[in-house]
Image 1 (cartoon, helix red, strand yellow):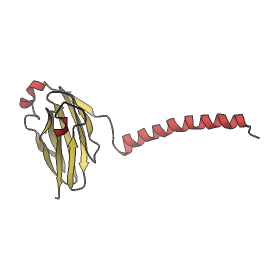
Image 2 (cartoon, helix red, strand yellow):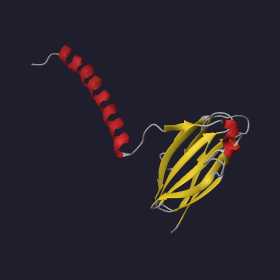
Image 3 (cartoon, helix red, strand yellow):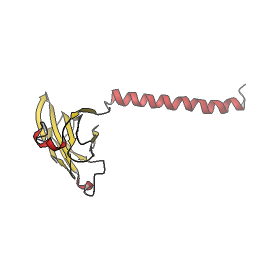
Image 4 (cartoon, helix red, strand yellow):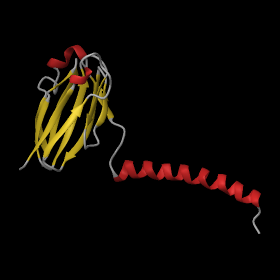
Length: 160
């Protein structure tokens, strides 16, 4: 027969095992099943030379890098993104190459896995697949000054 003390100990031991195991499973599922991971630092750049350094010398949808795959150069700068509007076809896999010109900014695209920090002097790469046509808003999620609320843009996904 199990006594009261044993039941109380089990009441503490079982959750203390189940919670870390559940968290480990959540990390594994998000990393491998949902392709969510830490964005990579893809290099460095001199913030003063952004306008003359490829691919940031021509921000926007730059080029097709594979079948239905596109690369986008995006710059976070004083209270705006350059460009503010991007157009891609439905089903496209978009590789974002982004940086900041001045202070730390954020880039979050609603409905996607893109949620990165844009740090001056660092190039960040992140990829997203836009399966459904429509508009996907992107915003700065790092407070960057008094005009922070004006820092947004739109990815317009068009029918093929």
